[in-house]
Amino acid sequence: MPRYHIARFESDATPPLGHPLCGGWIEPVRGFDDPLKCLGVVLLGEGKPVVLAALDWTGLRNEAYRSWRAALADAAHTIPENVALHCVHPHNAPFADTEAQKFLAANDGPPLMDLAFFDKAVKASSEALKASLAKAREFTHVGYGEAEVKHVASNRRVIGEDGKVKFTRTSATKSKEARDAPEGLIDPMLRTIGFWNDDEPLAALHFYATHPMSYYGDGRVSADFCGLARQKRQDEQKGVHQIYFTGCSGNVTAGKYNDGEKANRAILRDRMYDGMVAAWRNAKVRKCTGWNWTVEPVKFEPRREASFGEEVSTRDMKDPKQTKARRNNAALQLAWLKRIQTPIEITSLDFGNARTLHLPGEPFIEYQLAASLASGQTPVCVAGYGDDGLGYIPTADAYLQGGYEPTVALAAPTSEAILKKAIEKLLKK
Image: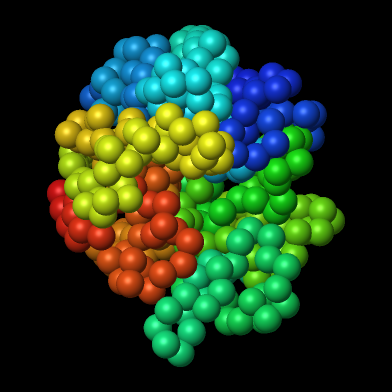
């Protein structure tokens, strides 16, 4: 009989004082509410090792993503395509694109990130992974459970009678009228995959779709309510490695249930925590008979509008009269255009009783719901915020409806058809 092992690793990814947060367009680090982490597992015993990891940062784009993924792969003695690295996406956290930072530095632009700190964080995680291999534990069983989370997620885009976006519900929505609007399209289920060695629990991977912010912009580093829920569960269930993945949340926030009052962070944390506890309690566990890891390379198309082209982005990045956000976003666009011919690998891990799906960018919730349909009777746990090079991935209709996301998305309207085709192909392999 084959034997399977799981290695569990954790490293610190907290930025230093003064480091830019969320790509440099909000207040930099002034203090610390809670640490940021890189948490992951390595699965061994079925072909090349598979790495699943979540980072408490806003995003990793282009070469920043690919270099971090390659470092983890090297430490795990596997290939980069077997590493699924995702960001949780809190905003009082770093946002990394090493190529964009080099563009900005060469043009006296505002800092997006600190390259030396980035290298330090990558090294810390790869060393933690490498050290964990010597302590890998055998696991015999895999379980899947789910539970509804109430009064957390709401669709950010409230559509009016004219078919256009009437309200944009940000993570902290002040407008009572916007908060009183219906919850909208979400996926209310928190899904958990667990690993056991006979009766001993070893790790829990949690998946839920919402922007994970209660409030931000004050310069105080935090993994926010989703990271805090994960930590609360870790403190309670000692010895069980807890990892949290943010699902397809490009158009989902807690805005209906959060007006930005600081007390709401703990309230939202506890609702997420309750979902984690319930999903674990509901888990159906069965003996592990191996897994199937599949990869689907995908190429996306650039936006064709003049305002997203290389010429205007270069001009905006170099213009000292532009805002920090404008210059930094222009650099991100240039970095995306530079690597756009490099495929993004969409991946899935199938245990038979449950599977995962690993997506790039900030996908809309529609992609997660489409994945559930494509997966049929096998429940699928979806993680977004992998390679975030293309940013938001709206639906094609969203570009006509207006609202915030299409104004900054680097993904073209054709991305919906491309991504949905890849998801269906991958989940039916």
